[in-house]
Image (cartoon, rainbow over all chains, first blue to last red; front, side):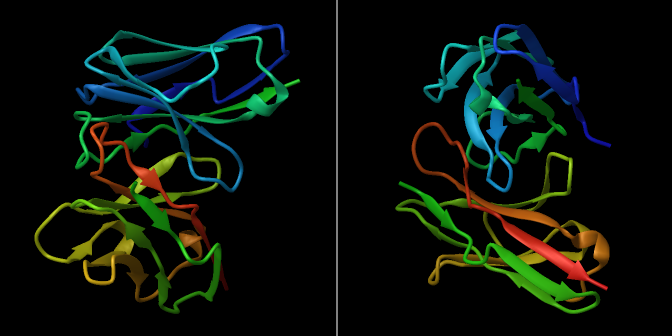
Length: 114
Length: 114
């Protein structure tokens, strides 16, 4: 059983839609991450939150908008996505943001853009 | 900049045979090393980590890895694989730069045949 829960598991949306991905963890972790993963590729970091504040934005297009309402929740708001944004979106958390901190991943949301 | 090289994109092996998945890293500072496994339609799961101390690290599911600083390697081994070990395996390194974000290798697909 994964300790990081992501909803929905699958999402199909048109290029003009607005949708949100949700991630939740109850391990008391203070760092949370969003990754994008294409098939047969490693995860690519998108955003990092540390103590509910945006710590890293890896030059992600503004059509992706992260939000961290509290220490347990992480959202990713989607708007006007492109077909190349179709991918598996993974959320992860770690106790703190630090080099020695292993990350705990959710099972992801598989996103398809029509 | 830190980097990770997973030399094999795919490793086929028969059930109950031993396996080694190779990982080499490059970094100008001390590093922390991780192996993650990704089963189909799931997120990444931590197999094991090297932070300091003993260079032989034991992980879950019977896997182990050896940190070799002189050869900048962190190869993953299992003495006898099962069908259920079929998955994608990612080596990751962190420690360089202020962001402490891990760099993932491209992944190795382990395929266990009956």
